[in-house]
Amino acid sequence: MGGIARCRQRLRLTFARMHPKEIAIKDFTYDLPEELIAKYPLPNRDASRLLIWKEETISEDIYRNLDQYLPSNSLLVFNNTRVVAARLLFQKITGATIEIFCLEPHTKYPDITTAMSTRGSVTWMCLVGGASKWKPGNILEKKIVHGNMELTLQATYIEKIKDSFAIGLSWNEPDLSFAEVLHLAGGMPLPPYIKRKAELADEDRYQTIYAKHEGSVAAPTAGLHFTDTLFQKLDAKNIARSFVTLHVGAGTFQPVKSDTLEGHPMHIEFIDVTAESIRNLINHIDTHITAVGTTSLRTIESLYWLGCKTLAHPYIQPEELTVQQWDAYEMKGDLPAKVALQALLKYLEQKGLNRLITRTQLLIAPGYTIRIPHALVTNFHQPQSTLLLLVAAFAGPKWKEGYN
View 1 (cartoon, one colour):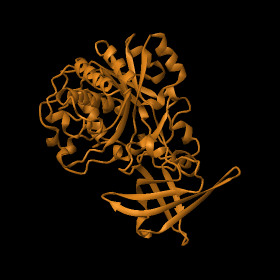
View 2 (cartoon, one colour):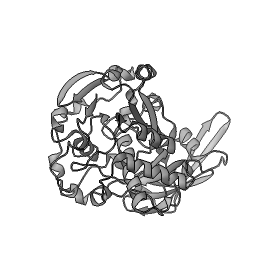
View 3 (cartoon, one colour):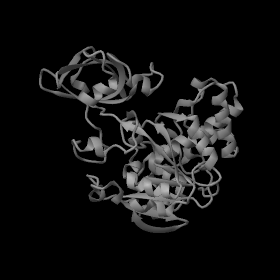
View 4 (cartoon, helix red, strand yellow):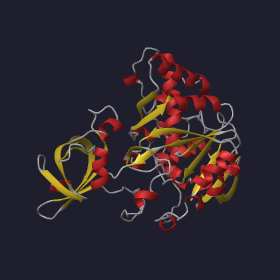
């Protein structure tokens, strides 16, 4: 089941002013019975139930009729990331199974796309199941037969870094990219709240129909409900589509373990946005913009702060142009959204760039003022999660009424 929430006045629907560092995570919970968590998706993507929250009024429909609740001549922003088969299973000679979950490329790579296209070998940051049974320097091996090709994939434990492991992965087919190796050797990851093993059908159903750029370890789930039929209905109302890329990391599901947000390190994710997408936002900022999913919202809100930074520091280098966890609460953020986006676009043009690839650590929580989207299409999120905090920031103090 998914929902759509809409702010009546984008800049005015906010919580009582406090720094999000002071927020107690215990205040962001609700009753979530295990039996209400869908283990499998519906056969028809757009048949999922839709909760509509518009100006304090709640009603219900199905996703197929989403077009009826969005204004003509508006803009929908989608995240076109593609989920990779990030789970790799290796078996030791002793019979013990080691599970390697590929999180993100090692910091020596400038972005996910570069690391995914690497051939022959790659270094990846991973979670390791059964790590106590695997010693540094030991090599694990996995063989996969595909047609006339026998792929041999090796994994080397390099070192433990904080909560993950640096793992060296190499393979015997030098013409294959790492992305192609994962397709052949890996398994599809499912969110931790879906308590079942991945199945063959998940390889298709757990991708959006517009998924394009590989790099996510989880799907941008709000987009899973869109179909070609729904797109045709949106086209008939002249509702435009624009695409950004945010590669969803496993940190998305990381629970807030500290009592307050001050002790929670927000996960970092890669974003990739074209100059054309920024122009689309500028052209619709005065009419209506709908973010499809929390990742799309996080991306376009990050663009606002990046624009503010280019105005404050016009000579900043592209590799330094990132969004940190508390930037939105500690920077001056009184620029109109259009001005900030225009500044970012001008910066890219001056640098001769037609796209921006960077990282964002933006934490959106109550106390944050939404700058760009007027509406949000999103699924329900787990209690005491940063995704729930984002929805609460967007919907306002009565967010729990919608969840209840």
